[in-house]
Image (cartoon, rainbow, N blue to C red; front, side):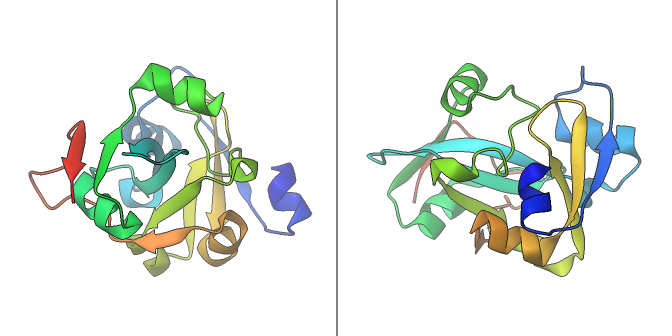
Length: 162
């Protein structure tokens, strides 16, 4: 929230039970559509020194092949929950691109976000979400727009080649 305040980006705080980890469950708990609540996933490209963060709607699955093509790398894999927590210092369900801004990791935001005025993302801890306008958020996170959602029936395998 301090980061948003420093950048003069308006936001709304939304709370939910901190026992929830799944973004779709969070969307239901805060009473917003799944496509407005974004989850943040941690991925690792083969040979890359730093992980990639990927933000996509809670009701979608990540297509690792599309991500690899967007990142211009050969292979990308999902990191396991424990590894994601070790890399980020945040608990799964509370991983936030805002909290990891200073790590200078590449962050991909699914292009569908540009069709919305606001999206909801983690505030960096379970139980807190932030409703933020998309355009200032894009600039603040230095996010790369990409089509990373899987087509129906595909997505989030452990790894994929581009």
